[in-house]
Amino acid sequence: MNQARRETVRTNAASAPRILVVEDEQDLAVLLTYNLEAEGYVVESVERGDEAELRLAENPPDLVILDWMLPGVSGLEICRRLRARETTRTLPVIMVTARGEEAERVRGLSVGADDYVVKPFSVPELMARVRALLRRSRPERIADRLAAGDLDLDRETRRVRRGNRDIHLGPTEFRLLEYLLEKPGRVFTRAQLLDGVWGQAAEIDERTVDVHVGRLRKALSRGRERDPIRTVRGTGYAFDETFGKA
Image (cartoon, rainbow, N blue to C red; front, top):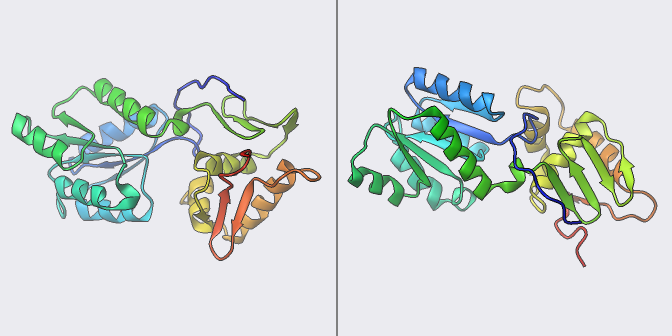
């Protein structure tokens, strides 16, 4: 099923792109966070480079806005390390700095930054750069529709269809399917699903994930229909990347 994809940012916590702001100027960090959240992104802000390293290792976001000069570890070094790791090699990075000389821009881009913004900068321009980078790197995070085989999820209408029938899902099951569909084949641990679907502040036992996956499976598959969710023993769950393929 080929359907047009409307590219727009949604505020649903499970589908909204996650952005990490690494900036030690508090006023600027607050300004960036406010404007990014107003655009519908999920934003986390840290002040130190070493703290950013921990966040990036634990749960990489969809994009990083990274100050050059930071306490702990410099933004330049963080960017270099991101590009050296397989899991973050293609993570979009916008470098923010007061260094405007051409040689410094070249240096920032040479270590792997995708874009470079010099302070003081236009906030609307930065928002446009964020959207452009996300559109290129993670189109599934801003698309209104996700589809695999005969399964279609519409974020705007909050409807799910399989073939010719509507599938009625509760809010949690919808977010769970949406989260898995964004990365077919990727195996998520129960802890990662809790963070991504329920949120990091949720005080829920990991066994709750199994309950909701069971409900989702029951709703998605009838009779001999193929189950699109794959269980990886001892690890967690994935949306089967071979679903709908010959």
